[in-house]
Structure formats: structure tokens, C-alpha cells
Image (cartoon, rainbow, N blue to C red; front, side, top):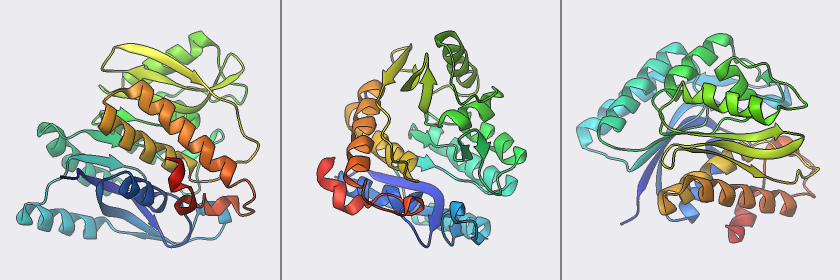
Length: 271
């Protein structure tokens, strides 16, 4: 029987980012996927003009109906959250999941390149720290890791000692595995973190590709979830997700609209 995953995150009406980027990957790799949208988003915020419809009340009613109907999930992912009320609702949901031994994956979607996304505030950061505390696996990018841990984000990156300190600061927020994507350590691009199962830090270098598409963090999260649930090995799942993202970017290098995300359906043979 297929495992059923629940994705809690924003649902764009245009573009292959956020939940739209994750669905084809997770269904292709053999999971049944349900979605609880935290917001309906007109398009990627990076376009400069957008609208957002908050769905907190819809989420509240839906979770109530699902409980009455006895729906269950084998793992849950959380992404973008819009408000304190939504955070309270999701935190309560995650606490129930964890009490039943259901693994929680969190991508604390808040910003990139040293700053927060449009509309994301310090209150959102504080809310996300609460969600992170309930997760078994967190996959922030470097900017999000710095905001969560109150480190100053530097474009030139960190020394090994500083990178370890950043990982340890995140470990103080969560009992789970920490994975920091798009990190820079000792002048090298890497994905680094802490494997909670094997109780050790790790760092996996990669070569940066001179093409940056939005939504690659969502693709990484989907690949990592799929590989982690199948192998149970956080480091090998991380490397596999890195390899998958890299292959997809290379195949999409000719695409001109980087805000639209990767053409994922044409890349499913790569994973």
C-alpha cells in the first residue's frame, strides 16, 4: 500500500513553485499526496504583483472533517504559513501527528539571498521557530537558517567553526535532523547539517550552476522527503536530493522565466 503524505503549504495559481513543484515529484515516486493549502497565491511574489487569499478558516474546518472521517497520513510536510492563527492551528495538528509517531518535515519558507520575502515579517519568523520545534526534519536555506537562529547572514559565507555554530543553534530549536541548503563554508558551496539519527554533523559540497530557478528549494524538499521515507538515511537522502535538483536545473537551463520554476514534468525520468 502506498504511503499517504500531507502537504501543508501555499498553493500558487500560476507557476511551478511551492506545493505545485512538490506534487508531481512525490506522486511520481510512489506516494499518495493530499494537500491542505495555507493560502491561495496568484503567482510567485518575485513578479512584484500578486494577491494572497488566506485559508485559515478553510483549514480549520477541513481538519475537523478529516478527523471525523478518520483520514490518516504516514508523514506530513509544512511550508509557508501566513499568520499567528494559522501557526497555532498547524502547531496543534503537528503535535497530534508526532504523538502518533508520524514524521514531520518542515521547510521554513521565509526568504533567500539574505532577506525575507515580500510580506514576511519578524512575527512570521517567530511563528516559524515554533513550527520548527515540532519537526523531525527541517530544510531551511542559508537565509532562513540565519533568521531562525539570529545569525547575521553573509554572502561570503562562514568558516567551518561558524557553520557548526549555526547548525548547533538550529539544533537548539528542534529535536530533529537539520539540513541547511545553499550554504557557503570555507568558500565552497555545500549542503550541511546534523543527522539526528546518527548523531553527527555533515557537509556535502556541490558545484553551483549559473542558472537560478525559483522553486528549487521545494523540489529539494520533495526529493528529500521521498528518499528519506524510503531509505531512512538522512545523509544519502540529502545527497540524492542534491543530485536530482542539479540534474533538473541542467535540463531546464534554456528556460527564460526563472520565476515560473522548473518544468518538473519533463524531468521526472531523472529521479
